[in-house]
Length: 145
View 1 (cartoon, rainbow, N blue to C red):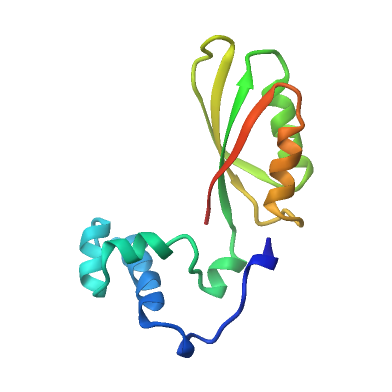
View 2: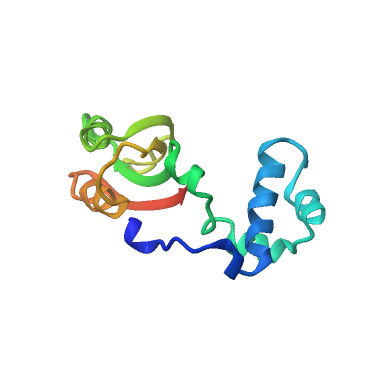
């Protein structure tokens, strides 16, 4: 996962990269009630914020607990959710929340938020391992923060 990143001094980057971080901080601190207000305060367009928000991180944010949101389709059979949770735990992940839909045609959608800060390998490896669990279909990484 870290192979996808570069460490670059911010003085050579366009100023809107810092403004993306400023918008994120305004939202996190509650100084702005929504994205529209935060981008106005920072002097940034909404489209620029949404284009870069998932790709610009401060080094301190990368070293703290990282969260990932994944979605999977599970066969409605005993032990499949348990096997999924065991695999996440086995690689060092910690499940924070689980949302499961009611099974329709014996398939349920499950969305998990996971603390991935202690996973030593790449998230792509975890997603591959999850896809190999019998009864788990369509694993998808929705977000990483």
